[in-house]
Image (cartoon, rainbow, N blue to C red; front, side):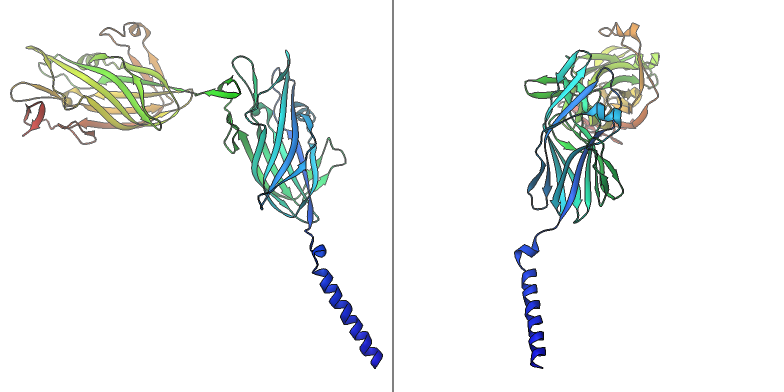
Amino acid sequence: MKQGKKFIGLMFALLVVSLIAACSPQAQQSTSGRAVFTMTDAAANMGAVTSIKVTVDSVKVLGENGVWTEVSSKQQTYDLLKLKASGTQVLLADYNLASGTYQQVRLDISKVVVTDASGDHVAKLPSGELKIVGKLVVKENSTSTVKFDFIADKSLHITGNGLYIFAPVVKLEMRERADVDTRFKENVRISGGKINEDTEVGMDIDGNVGEGNKIKSDSKLSVNGNRINEEAVQGRVVFMVTDAAANMSTVTSIKMTVDSVKVHGEEGWVNVSSKQQTFDLLKLKADGAQALLADVNLTPGTYQQVRLYISKVVVTDASGDHVAKLPSGELKIVGRVKVNDNSTSTVKFDFIADKSLHMTGNGTYIFAPVIKFETREKAHVEIDERENEDRDTDSKANVRIKDGNVDEDTEVSMDIDGNVGKGLKVREDSRLSVRWDKIAEE
């Protein structure tokens, strides 16, 4: 009986020792999982370029604790076009990481050498640090994968003087619990598992990396010192003036002088034209013409306002010429002008003269513009070249517009205080007078 009690006591002591050992720091070491990093290239062949060799100095991952872990510090060089031709993915790193979720991966690229028909060329990098936000989940006793699929034809650019720029565009894929065969480091095979990330990221000229960040294929690039510059892609915008008004009894001419045209966008007011031009509205009506006001290139985007500065309106009737009074020389119209890269937008000011022109009791003309305002994007425009030669004379270039998407098609007008908008105008039956340079309405 005593021996039985001794045996039970001994077993209890051993159990206590085991529990203490299990709670010791050594027993609580963090578990780990395997992470395999690969590199490939899915780009199409690229003309005269026969090789793009990318040198990677290190690979790192960022943990939830904000600490970077280096998974490879071995400098390695990979030929992207060779990877494409062979359809393989090479081993970049094979490392055991502590279980958990990693928020970012980073490649440090020290050099890119491009080979074409004229030889080898060191490409300019916006940044040698390719830092990508993506969720890498590592679980104990399983394998996770990170694949950097460089898209060479989207990554490589050339300046006007033949310098190569390499701004990486990468398809990033991350898996957990994947099946990986790394027996051949030059041809790693990945299958199965759960895909946590499958996205395309790019790098802009400032080295910023993310979805939607990239250099456009049609960008005009240059290198100034250590900086890459990108000329803004522009879209063409054509402005024109016309008049759809009916003839107005004894009035034979309404000559309107425009001093400048401006548009307002995200960067503020942009000057479109500062050339003083005079248009005869009734002649435009008789000819059924649209006179060219400006033909310019603007940075793509949406402009919210257009402004005409009208310095003078001269009305001709049976008794001669008369300078009309303007409620305001500033015709500011709220209206959307969309400018797209490498396409043409149009802005048409269709002055309705018979609604715009008024007369006071003592015979003074008042011109308060009423306009049909139309804007289009992606339009087809023809300019009469013969008339275009006579821009500085009374015969203005005639513009013809076809197709395109109409963004604005509205009638706006000016009241006696110079305010412009829908429904603001001077009524035809108004009794008007001019007192101390101000228009009054009875």
